[in-house]
Amino acid sequence: MIRPKVTIIVPVYNVEKYLTCCIGSILSQSFKDFELLLIDDGSSDLSGEICDDYVEKDARIRVFHKENGGVSSARNLGLDNAQGEWICFIDSDDWVEVDFLKELIQYDSFDLVVGGCEGVGCMIYSTKRNENLIIDFKQPNKAAQILNANNENTISAFYYSCGKLFRNSIISQYDLRFDIRMKMCEDTCFLIQYLIHVNEIILSNFSLYRYRLSSIPSKYASDYNCCKTHIDLFDGYLSELEYILNDKMIILKRKIYTAILTQYLIHLKAIENYSVFKQEVCAFNDDFTYMFWKEMNFGRIKSWIYCLIFRFPLLGYNLSLIHISEPTRPY
Image 1 (tube, rainbow, N blue to C red):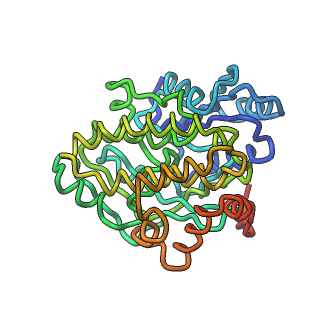
Image 2: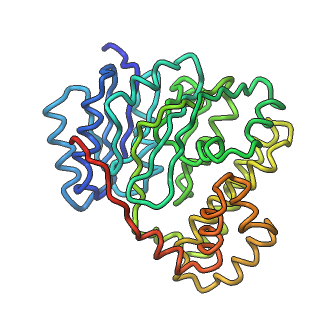
């Protein structure tokens, strides 16, 4: 069997509304040398049947059905069965433009290829860059300097695993997997593990991944103890990368840390310990609000929006439900 250049892993759970759009966008790629692994994570709707239907249409597709265990366990099953030289993760409610893989694969001399991402159905979300950025992890001081730069798109590239190319050889050699204990922000922890073993990475200037932000808050985001556990786990992962980069990761750590906390804060309307948790966040970062978001180059208006979200979680939750019109999808 000829080894495919890319393995695309799509975890699937109760997304019958969006799944056809996602799979259709993948099968329409101008770059054809890939396999598609659809991991049905115990869906209770028609998602599993939709996956099975596509197997009959394209030999590049393999489907795996499993009991529900969460997105991390689904992605891990995909990694266990991946045959491609490169790994690409795509969420089942997202989609990609036709030249998405073609643009990524041209940079296959790097250990990690990062494509830009545009949010759909959300207020503020974009990681589009004006130019390519190369980060050489063989020069830790220089890498830390770049990562510490006040650049929103540079930092936000490490929040998520989708829309990137990972070398399967690195993942296999170091047995890298998603942490099934993490119910949110598991992408960031996986990326931190991966970055420990890379040489050069590239953040490309194209943005062909379309990310759909859900308006449904995670059930875990309203759990105070779960939130604290996530922060502790995340801190352990960051400490490893901090050691590799000569302990020059303070700004990066604060920015990613704060991004995780903000995700919780937006959805914390049900949390009983919100006031306590807010005090702990402030203790971690005294200028958490306006100065932090201004530092990330969000601009004055966006900075104040995030201040309001932080100080008034109900407002943040309501804002997260506001949808802008979606661009036309060809699938």
